Image (cartoon, rainbow over all chains, first blue to last red; front, side, top):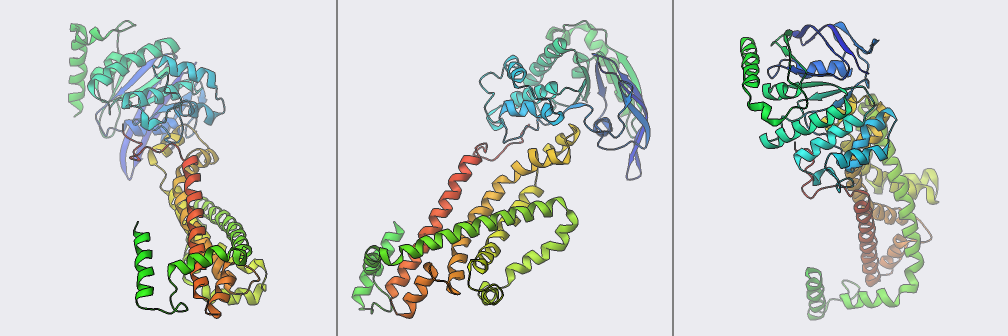
Length: 245
Length: 245
């Protein structure tokens, strides 16, 4: 169960307003994407949810409990895989759970196998390709017991082919586990393909510009990317973003 | 190869120019003395090795403790750092007699000298290693809700290990030198004593034997640490690259 709710969050850095009156919810087992131009404060928003800083105004609740400025309430996957070079893949995958104090090696090994990393469980990160590292990093966040997973542009550094592969993989694994996901990206296609709901942020200061409910049925196939409907959606969101920039 | 060539040139020139043995003995004499005089110096050798090991261990532990202390308490670093550098500016030769006046001729002043020589490279290297922790990984740890203790043991400490080993390797060679110098002050046994006795009785061949022994101890000590390093730090890729996306 996860129910994240942000209530009129405002934040500024060095006198500049970054976020203004941000308000949205992520419901249980929902995949929500925050879409916005680069530098629109998406990462800052994540840091606030992660509890690294306290917002100037507003409150953050997770399952009715206030988590404003409280660390460790969410599971997190950063933009770069951030695997620890001295840990093997299993040890890395277990790290998130270890921090919270619930490491389960058996499940970790199963997940590694499902992620197609069988045979690499005792390898070190530098022996893996970019896509494999990202998979390991995602399993790490999945293995963390927190009900909400925050993904910060996890595929932005991958090449186009690996990226689509990873998106499909993420969808499959998400459908199976049904955790709540808050996803940040600046890629419209990625947002459309993955999400139940897209929240478009405006630029400087960021406010919630618009919210889209994405009606595509799951499981979604790659062919969806080329349908008329998908392109129509893309156009609509693109126009929305153009207004901002 | 170069070493052998050097020995050959040395041997030939000492015969060619008829250099007196008390001034510069040929290598063959030194080797001869090194082998036949074994019973003369093996007691000294053992005593020096013991002193070196003990001093090194104390120095290394002290170095690590200082590094951790200065890393965790920022105020302490600003106060203590200048003193640490000053401690390295005082010539050991000057300090040694003082230590004898204060602590007598026992093991204590010798250990203090070795510690003083050893701790500095270790402390500085470890401190740098701790400070240069990857900001990416640090960010992940914070977002994942790790406590300061977890951040230290799971991230900073393993990250500093390669630096710590660099420090250990430098100190390993210094520690032998420190031990020999401390033995000059006054000791019953040790390579330093053997050396002083040899030089005051114009047994230059024995002085060279002592020099070679010191070199051999230093090298084997260095090799031992390098071996240990290889065992402990198995994760490093050849290029040292571990953060590509």
